[in-house]
Length: 156
Image (cartoon, rainbow, N blue to C red):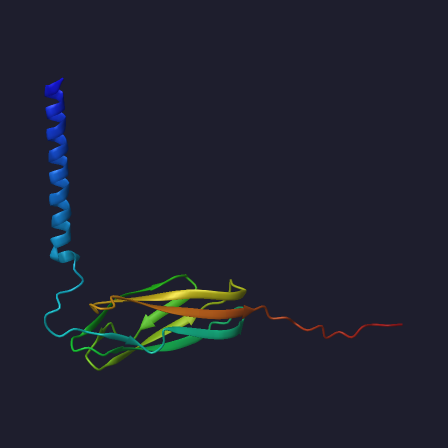
């Protein structure tokens, strides 16, 4: 019996030490850090944090252009754009923005399949070490187009 207990304790110690080493390695791995802060860094700035398209008729595709500016000293690289819904279409005029320069981010909201108040989001992923993910909120109120009754009441 004591031999089995010693083996069990040794196995537990090995597992604990292995876990500590693996966790320590993960914490110190440079690939897990956002970015090395030496040298010139980019800084993303977007013209609006949110945009309200207001009231629109179902089926309309309102568009807004956001300005994405690089306020930093290094090149800002837009790595990807993600929409929270297939009803949102985004495009950017350039994915590499020089210091002090800007790009146009065009956003179109397809309201065809929606009615009522709606909220969606856009995520901009970049190499900005301080804000690697920038979120923009989009709002809209979609109304169904009502055709007025133009026929007069027929009375005898």
